[in-house]
Image 1 (spheres, rainbow, N blue to C red):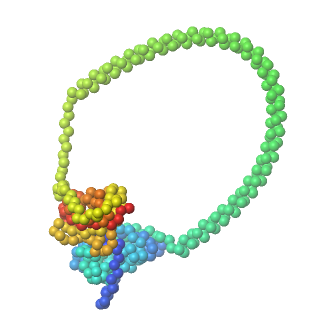
Image 2 (cartoon, rainbow, N blue to C red):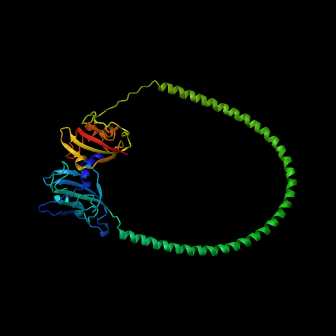
Image 3 (cartoon, rainbow, N blue to C red):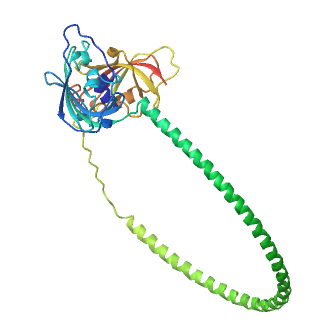
Length: 384
């Protein structure tokens, strides 16, 4: 999924400001579905806005769509993360609102265009559905919150001081009560100890008589316990004999089941594109290779992507912006994860990737047809 987004969404994050020499058209904003919301809920500069969108050229050709990917796009409004036509055309939108933008070239990608997807000087049409608006507080609001926190903290400290004074007074009162209680208990203890001494003398005489009776009972209980142990041993022997019979019956049933046979059937439904083989060719390898790419490494690459017919559909070289990703965690297509392992910094390779390891039956919009074999010329710039 990450590689699919690379081929069509990267152009939105890489903003190219182009100046037109001739007359410039104005941005056209049509509200196709109005949703009213409080001013505090309307998108302003610095807020995070999440949208679904479809992008078209004036001839009706679709060049990008988050609807096709079923993945909305989130960006910060008014800070240059998207084209100027979006930064201006989506000000004050509400969640759930829908707008149609006609963005002239000088507020889009100018005279350079965007690869083979958007021609130079193109006016772009966008149908946009606002999924969410997340308010990001500005400096004044943050300052106001900090002042409110300080005020509450000061109030809490005052309340704490009052509580501590109240607790101190209560502690003094409890201390006096504890001292009086201690004196009372000491007197009670003296009387109790005197009484206990008298009771100990009486108890000693009673203990002697009791021991004599207990010795007689002990002899009787010993005879009874010996009889109970003999009976318990007999019961355990009978229980063990019963368990042995049950285990023998279970074993016989298990042996009978081992003669039963079952057949399992496995059905394999082939992909409409078929299964291909990845072809990796090393076109250049430096003399010294101190570190090679492995799963989990963060790689920085330059690449040029073409269809098997030779038509180029993407290039980081043309944008002069290398591509970074983590190898072996599914951030790129399977053909990249498999074909880049073991590369050295400075090494170049040619990857021919079958459809089942690229974009399969789905393709990527009008850029990559379904079941396309892709050819990439790649160069590893750095390993982290």
